[in-house]
Amino acid sequence: MAVKPMLHPRNQHREGYDFERLFVRSPELEALTTRNPRGQTTIDFQDPNAVRMLNRALLRTHYDIDFWDIPASFLCPPIPGRVDYVHYLADLLAESNGHKIPHGPEIKALDIGTGASLVYPLTGRHEYGWDFTGVDIDPVSLKSGREICKRNGLNIRLRRQNNPEDIFEGVVGPDDIFHVTLCNPPFHASLAEAEEGTRRKWRNLGKGQSAALNFGGQNAELWCPGGEIGFIARMIEQSIAFADQCLWFTCLVSKKDSLKPLCRLLKKAKVAEFKVVEMAQGQKTSRFLAWTYYPERQRSL
Image (cartoon, rainbow, N blue to C red; front, top):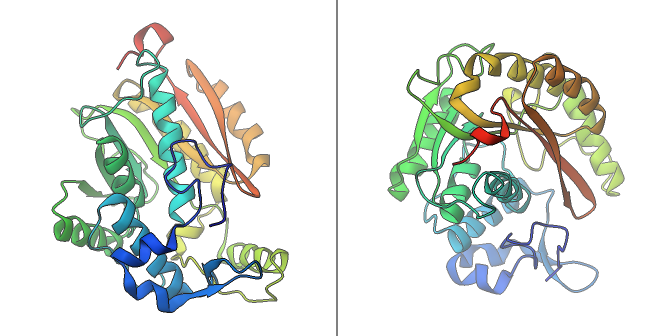
């Protein structure tokens, strides 16, 4: 196994993929594996079907999700990196809980842009027992999410955002209270930018000029006008109206250069505190931005 020591200490995938264990629950995965130059078992990460089958095996083996599938060409998220976000959110909430990691359905989480895969509710519910609400603008994604919940007997609330300009309005009711929001925003400002980003990734990996998105992705999953700065700026601006309904607002930030203008917006919004949480994952460093309107003395869970 290829060890991934940069993942969060509680991440089940820190020691790499245990393919022998995965084959026990998902024997169909074995036919899609190959050997890397070091003789280790792996898959072809350029093959969307192999990536999908790996995700299915990981969710079945590590998170007790017996059924998982997504529509063709939809975003197939890498499980280890996605669950890392959840673990770091647990650390964030622990700061307001006597430095104890909070478990149980009393913790309410709002997943903005939950997607067809439900990756955050599925992993977060298993790891910490949190109560999740997922929202999305895409009816096909929500239909997929509802099928996953139905087939696994899960109670995860899914709500449709009818106005793509709104982030919280229309899906957060007046009586809703959340401890944390999470979001993997559209990173690119256009489809052309998304495709060029993919080509650049494959060039860096020595994989030629392929524009294929090995993890898939529909337009709304990959890009929006203004890119991630535009999206997160709207999130910050709109979070003001819901300041007393959520303890911590958070959002992934792909590009380090995006942080400076977003931090300026947070200062302008007069939040009580904001922070950038770095998450080193192998060769890549990702991060999320977190902000709260609650003063420290009022943050106990």
